[in-house]
Amino acid sequence: MAPTVALANPVVSADAQPSNIFQLTTAQQAVQKIQALPEIQAWQQYITEKSLVLENGKNIRPVLRVEPRPVEVAGKSYWLVHFLESHAIHDHHWQSFWVSLHDEGILADDTSGKYLDLDTWRKQTNPMRRIRQTVKLKDGTYIGRGLDDYLEVDGDRCRLNLSGAVHPWRSPCDLIQIDADRIYDGYQYWHRL
Picture 1 (spheres, rainbow, N blue to C red):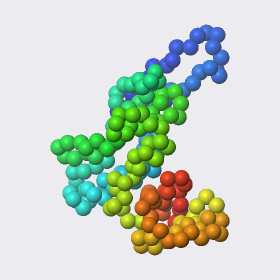
Picture 2 (cartoon, one colour):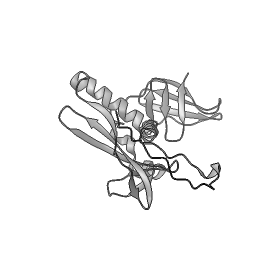
Picture 3 (tube, rainbow, N blue to C red):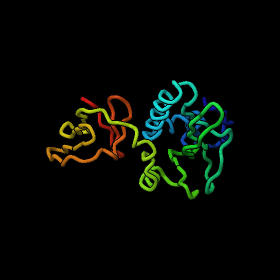
Picture 4 (cartoon, rainbow, N blue to C red):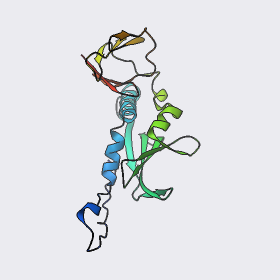
């Protein structure tokens, strides 16, 4: 489990009003924010399944590790959180994230060392390609945000029905199976009926 780092209370002048006081993000909250990302959930599932196949679930596990002190990026303070695939004798680094201490901002790195917001990171690096070849989607009908929106998965194909407009069958390569009853398409969650 990631270490928890206690932050000292910010110094507030005597004349400061309560509305000027803000909560800093703790290291544990930073880890929770990263753990909630759909890519992390899918990567964790993939590593866990891989461990069951390769090592009977013993030696490979997904790990989120937070650095003990905040780091500065472009004048802002962030918790640096690493997603790792932990083996018995070494760790394999998958991705690093920077979680802002002061707001909801999360940055990710790309292979060139640039800091990207999550939407840009998703578009430029396609983080799900790491596991897409091995994770099979569960067949069935999944409901979207609206009652008229649904997604059908049938083997190696899928199609959308958005407000009555049925799209043609296509490859489900951009879909992520989060758990037995949820799929994420990069924009929204789909829940199995």
